[in-house]
Image (cartoon, rainbow, N blue to C red):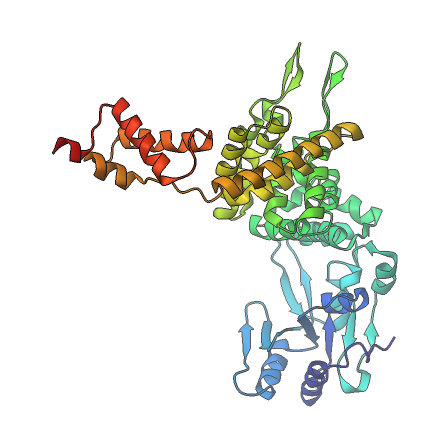
Amino acid sequence: MNLADKINQPVFHHVGNVADSLSRPCYVVGGYVRDIFLHRHSKDIDFVTVGSGIEVAEAVAATLGKGCQAHVFRNFGTAQVKRHDLELEFVGARRESYSRDSRKPIVEDGTLDDDLSRRDFTINAMAICVNASEFGQLIDPFDGLADLDDQLIRTPLDPDVTFSDDPLRMMRAIRFATQLGFSIVPETFDAITRNADRIDIISKERIADELMKIMASPMPSIGWELLAKCGLLIHILPELDAMRGVETVNGRGHKDNFYHTLQVVDNVARKSKNVWLRWAALFHDIAKPVTKRWDAKLGWTFHNHNFIGARMIPRIFRDMRLPMNEKMKYVQKMVELHMRPIALVEDVVTDSAVRRLIFDAADDIDDLMTLCEADITSKNEVKVKRFLDNFALVRRKMTELEERDRIRCFQPPVSGEEIMEIFGLRPCREVGTIKEAIKNAILDGVIPNEREAALALMHDEARRLGLSPVSDAE
């Protein structure tokens, strides 16, 4: 098959001409070729040459004009050339072999066939020639194009060898299945199951990269369910794996918290592209296995699972090499607060409770409501409608109170510094007591969020504490 029209762009002709001048066969390979057939745009282009890829990269950079240079990574035998918004990667064709206890290969020069056979999946093991004599010619030794048409993921060679050599490929198989909506062929999936424990030699950072791509997919649940079924999940995130299954006592069970969680994640994904809100959905019930108790009167309980779950988040993020910054704190806050709106709709929706929720969630209140609405997964349509209607009531009340009381960006009308100056105090417990009294009075609707009302309450609270303004003493 000739695909000259698919790569009829100056960059491919340019690279091909440079390769011809060096008498080097050169091919565009991997994901760029796959994405041509999937009609997906990519700015990253990988080239394989028979011989030194670095030499071709340096020659390409030299002919692209002033300011363009090849960034060489000699330890890996690769070089990168950036031109405008394109990123070109060059490598020499190679073959690889592995030892059992490492994923670092022994690399030797090889043929194009050697190079394609070492790739992870057939859909990534296709190449298109850019040399002038065979420009646009497709090389597809493992029928990757047929697997693309059939939406299948399989390895070019023996999957046990492929995954044992580089266990990260197991994660990539599941990531591609999730991103593309493809199926992993049974022999490939069975090999993942057999080699699942090999994932332990892969760095947590590399695993986290694949998980982030799964979470950014249209239906993240596909990936998490595959990870559970093949046995990778217990190695990657044992806390989530522990949520699987249902326990029954006296004929009373609880819902499968794992599959409930996956449904919540997908519900969030349909509403938001915020990947960290999706992580919050994944972790919102993470403490249920450790808080699960049987009560003869109440049945199964999970008391305080939101608070305990929030305390688990920093350790989980650290173990998984997820960022220990404001992203982690955001997920932690979502996990801790996710029961608050539900408690509101199950009770009378008071102004005070809504103000406090807005205050605690601040700018993340809309995300919190999205998570809580996604958390309603009952098959009882009447129950679902009742909850969603109540959430709509909470949202309306939030809008009304926010417009009136400006709680979301709450700043105390009277600062601690002012209190200290008025009463001649140094930092002390009494200052905090007065500030807290003002805050609570505003959130409870006792006084409006206005300076004069806050000052009056400040003086009342100070008198209660036996304090007098400095001016009175004079």
